[in-house]
Image (cartoon, rainbow, N blue to C red; front, top):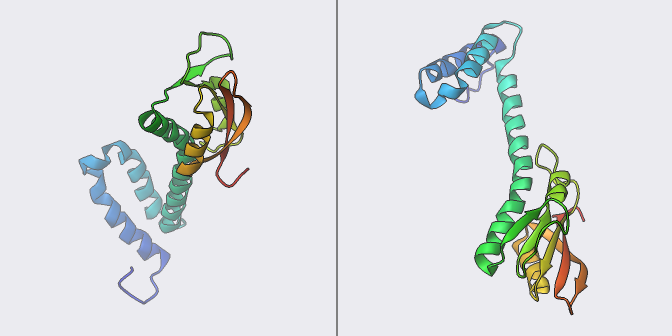
Length: 173
């Protein structure tokens, strides 16, 4: 279809796409999606359906899903970078103060992470980090330097070496 400048009717476009999809049914790489490929082929054989439009719609849906999933994944990428580059591990707590805390460890409330991201992975609320260390300002500078989140110090007690850092999504502060 891309090789010709002539108009190709919908029925012919569907026929070409069905011929393209048919070998995928026997291909082992697509065995998990075999049922979906067959349903797309049956849609393409119906005169009233526009298979090309359905495929474009599926591609857009997939791209949106990847974008949203990447927002939640950024948090875990950030925590991995902090641990590898700064040597500060992360632990999740069910309720603040429910267990013994250790210095030089980032603590996150599991509830903040669960409520900070919706099912699609998009961040809808700031996420809090709690750190008992003299590296609170260093950590904020590091986070802002990665460009994954905008970090700000919510509370900082220099005498007790405790800090509450809030992570905002980039561009939504």
